[in-house]
Length: 165
Image 1: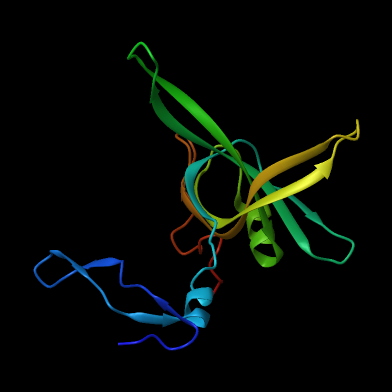
Image 2: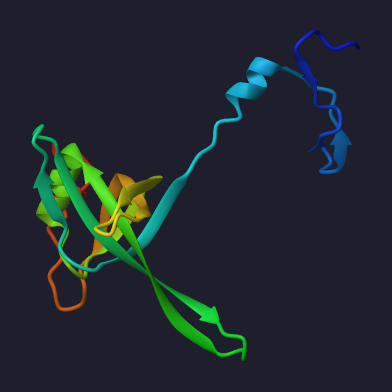
């Protein structure tokens, strides 16, 4: 079979056959198909605790913006073999209705699940140095529970990212 003009030969790629064994494929893809599938994705999912209450502000355009930080605990092994606890902090920003809900419901110590897009933002600090920040633009935020000693919100209350019915 001769490839059509503009086609990419994927004959060198392997796929699993019906018996689970690797086999050669002879599929042909056009350059347009290959280009469409070459988009990247930078998505993040976090489960952690809020370091402080969400900060809600309204921009001059009237758009709501909420910012908060999520602490994610992990264990790591040192060079000597001992385990230690470490905490990573992630900045999160939410927009529009999600931002308003975050501003209303997110308080320090709550356990949350955040899903969103990883974004790299640059700015100039007071000394004129260019700085970069990696933050998560939230697409969904769900309350997972209250810290010990606090009451849990009523079950009929929708999660932060859900619409009220």
